Image 1 (cartoon, rainbow, N blue to C red):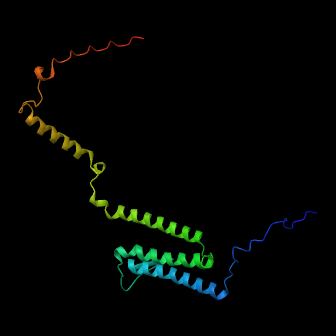
Image 2: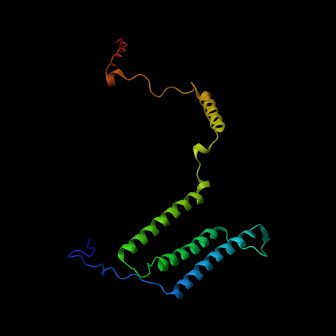
Image 3: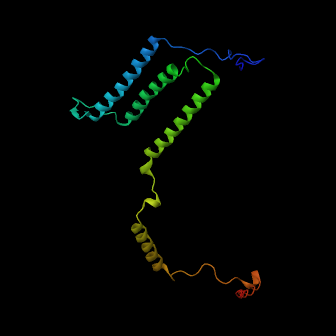
Length: 185
């Protein structure tokens, strides 16, 4: 029979702290908070729209709450609170405050904020830029025709700015090189 005991020199992993077991009261409290936040999200969405539809039953709310631009931040705030409760309680991160966990959390949060920031910049300033690719081709063709008509008006009206070089100043121009014969190989 094989001996499944630890080998010599092997120590137990006791330096990592113990696994924290949550009591039933904390689990119930966390569950109620998460369900409550989910219900709050649904209720706010219904009141923002002014109507709802549950299992084919349609109804209108007595009043609307227009959040406008605050709609997404409010929804993300509620979702972030739910993430906190799940990560801190169910995943046990509340009881394992190590530098590695903190680095991962702060790094992930930073990149998420950068992602949301660039997405916001894209949507917020989308109409302020003129893109050539967004201009229809028929408008571009009209602009080319107008530019050619303007150039035709001035053709031959002004003397050339650069003429023949002054031989006294620059010497005689070099003879033009003869073109190379095509290779027949």
